[in-house]
Length: 146
Image (cartoon, rainbow, N blue to C red):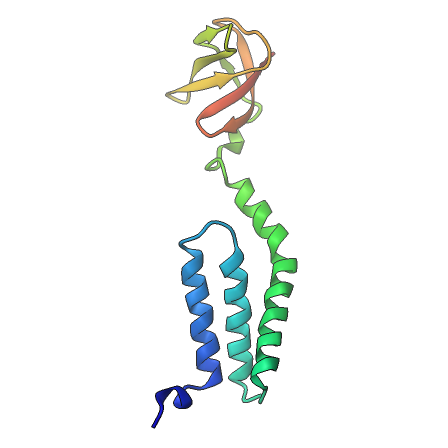
């Protein structure tokens, strides 16, 4: 008795889908995520006792993977990009005061919410000047004079 002959098609596809999703945790991007979705959905479709040839199963998994890529890629990118700065979007538009400033590098620091932040600007600023936070780039506030 060969154990591979005893494993159902839906078990193989669901297991493959879970493997792809686990691999996604180790990689950057969404390549394995969409393969996982295609494999899982194919496995669950096969759970309904629909008989498909192996080539039809592969085509189904590929089409579902591509479909999920087309439908979910942009919303997922927007969602992840909106959270890339750890939720600091509420900083934008806030007025703060420059604590130190290096004119030659156009960088400095400011005390904001109890933390000394790095600043950068495309314009010349001075110590004590009021500036508006435009965006957060990592641990640096991009500012402009007001």
